[in-house]
Image (cartoon, rainbow, N blue to C red; front, side):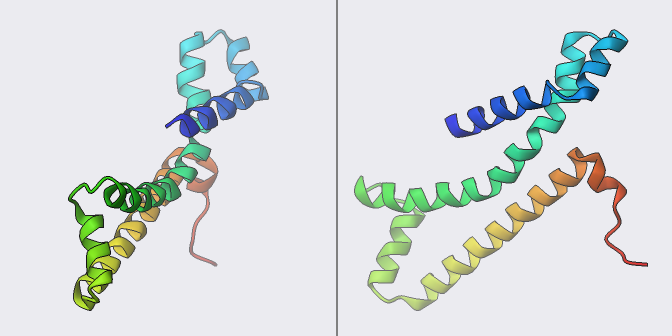
Length: 127
């Protein structure tokens, strides 16, 4: 969480120095409107980009935590299945994790398209 907050803070500080933010302030918009409406939306783009791999790191970390502290859970069951050579469980769990990662990447791509106006203007179809 601290990494996400630092990334958002750095991105926000960088965004607040851009010309369109100065223009919005010069127009007389309230500070809250400028920060939330203009700066925060563009500052979230790097955070959303990083959030996909962070979910993978959290899942991988649960494998370690569940095994070290003997917490019963899916990751501990997966490790026990690997050690017992239960290929059905290993394959099923691996496919489930792969589908989860694909779904998270899809959500990240959709969020990028919703937040970044440059991506909304582009079309994926070639003429």
